[in-house]
Length: 437
Image (cartoon, rainbow, N blue to C red; front, side, top):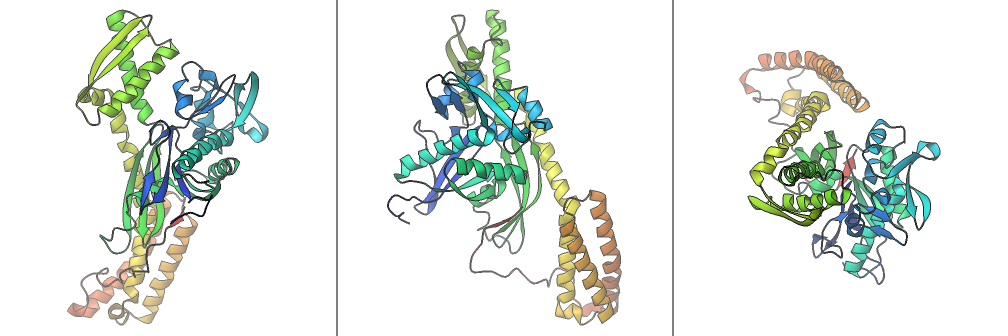
C-alpha cells in the first residue's frame, strides 16, 4: 500500500516500562524499525539538562552523571494516584523526585534549563511516543499521524485512558489501545493457525525489562478474550542485571579491597557491561567483562559463565512459575470450566438425535438452567472461586441426572458422548481481530 504524499501508514508502538519499540506493516510483513543507533528497541528514558532534553539512548547514556533529572519507569505512574501503594513503594527506589499534584496526580519534578519543572507521567510517556514516531518517520520518509499502542492486560480504564492521552499530547491519533498479550498472539500468527477447530487456549509468557506478565487468552475465529492475568510488576530483566552487578561488586571488593557500591557512575558503567554480557550469554556459554578505570583508576576484567549466571538468578527463574500456575488456576477455577460445561450442555440438547429422546419439560429445565448460568457468569466475572464452584455444582446437579436418565432409557442407539455431535465452529470469510477486555 503506497501512502498518499505526506501521509504515512499507521504504526504500532510497544510502549514498555524500560524499552519501547516501533513497527510498521510493509512488504506483507511487520518490520521493526531500528533507531538512529541501529537498535530495534529504544530506552523509555527522558533526561533534562541545562541546555536540552534527551530521549532514548542519549538519555540513558548520561544517567550516571545526571540521575535526578533523568526520568524512567513512567509507565509505573501512568493513570495512577500519588497515594496508591505501588506508587509510594516505587518512589523510594527512584533518584528523581515525585510529588502529589492536582487531584492527587503524581508529578515528576526535574530541573530543566535552570528552572524547576513538573511533568505528569502522560507527558513523559508522550515524549517517548514522539521519539518512536520520529524513528518511524525517518525510516519511512513520510509524516505519521496514526498509531496503535500496547498496554498490559491488567491496566485499568484510568491507565488505558492516560496512555491514550499521552498519544494525543504526542500529536498521534491513537486508533486503538491493544492488550500486550493479544499483540503477542497476533505477532506469532496464533489467530491464523488453523491447527484446531473452535476455541483455542494460549498462554502468553511476557518477561520484560521491568515487569513480568502472564495471560491466558482464548482465540476463536479471530476474536480474542483475556481469561486470566497474573504477574509480578517488579520482576524482569533488570533484576537479572542487578544480580550480576552485585556479583561483580563483591568480586571487585575481594580482588581490589575497594567498594564501588557508593559510586553511581562506576555502578552505571558496570551495569551497562552486565546488560551486554547477559545478552551475549544467550548465545555463548561464557563471556568477559572489561572496563577500563572502573573505580579510582583500577581496571576491571572478569569472566562469567552461563551456568554461573543461571545460578545467581535461579530463585528469580523459579519465581516466574508462580504467576503461571496462578493464571492457570484462576482461568480453570473460575468461569472457563463452567462456561465450557454450560455451552457443551446447550449444544448437546440442541442436537437432533438427543433432543428427540428428551422429554420437553426436561429439555426446558436444562435450557433455562444453562441460560441462567451463562448470564450469571457474564455478570460476575470478578466473583470468588467458591461462588463459581457452587454455581457449577448447581448446574451439574440439575443437568447430569436428566442426561443420565435419557442415556439409560435410550439404549445403544445414542451417540457415545456429549461432545461428539456438537456443531463445529463455522468458518467465516476470514479472521476478525477484536478484543474482549
